[in-house]
Length: 446
Image 1 (cartoon, rainbow, N blue to C red):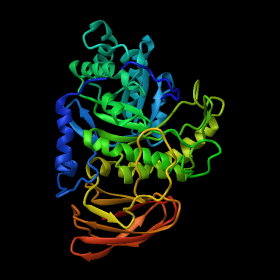
Image 2 (cartoon, rainbow, N blue to C red):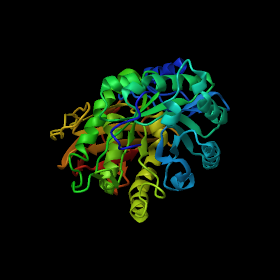
Image 3 (cartoon, rainbow, N blue to C red):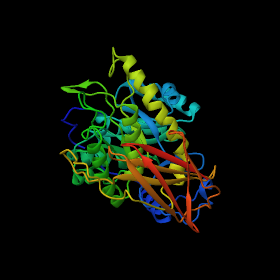
Image 4 (cartoon, rainbow, N blue to C red):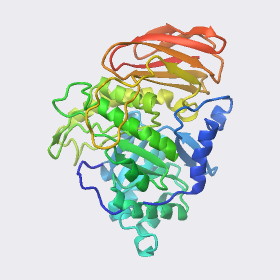
């Protein structure tokens, strides 16, 4: 993505209506009815945000997918390195009109297929921005990309440009329609800055499937968990959640925007491990985010040039451990998302004074909480985040669970903590714990 304020002007439209209906069906049933979760009964989907869908060319069907990934660009992509970092997907962005790009993308897709990773192919403004619905002469680059990749097992979706302004809607719409008319059954993606208005996002997303947002944070000189780097971003994410539910878009993907270097006049820093971990899991527990993408993996010829070691420190000691934690919940996030009935004594609006910000934002809950279920391992994950700086004694109530609890013992691996559920009455349980400021708890029980 770019930090430049003047976005590529002039671009939107598409979507197979069957895929939009698919999202609605997911919301109606609460969970998908695939083999990995067929035994889940009476699941209640409170967040009501559909998952990312991965189209399977061999069976002509969709399966839910929880993306854990990085943005990357052109010849600077390192799919093997992303895999080793705990990612299961990558956005391969910046695909334009250069002759070398098609061959380079094929090579990256081949690596991804071997590793079992998924790729979102990002078409840049030179491709998306020139498309006109009734002008076949503007279609050839799209035709070339679709012909090369529409049946590739590693393809997850198509991202249409980067942070386009609302006047770009006609071209984006035309591009999305063209992708599907050419036979691609993959979801279309867009990314928007949190500063865009709801009206502009609706205009841009008219027929696109997956909605993702980014918020630029972590400025040099700002302390750990500065409200500008923490509260503002979660408030932005919360402000988009109701819109995403209403419009039946998938994802609400959290693009972390851990820039970490100077961009123009703005000097950024990398988040600490505590900040980054809270950023990722508070977006899940509080706003129902169904994936995490990191900006940006490029340490040669671009971002972080001449300061690679600082980037590697962030990549290996901050992002990787959180990616590995997300891997543990990936199946549950895909097929056992937001189940049961969960409430807490922290279900009240935060008292934090949200710093003024451009774009819509809302107050989020003092405590975020979401319950997941991994049907393959018969394991529950209860993610709870303290979204404020002060210590809080949290009390969680659980009911309407899809599978009978076999043990009242609860563990939190990260904090090396063991707790006990209280069986209040049949099918109703309570859990109490003390969370420090901005703590993340991932409770596991069976």
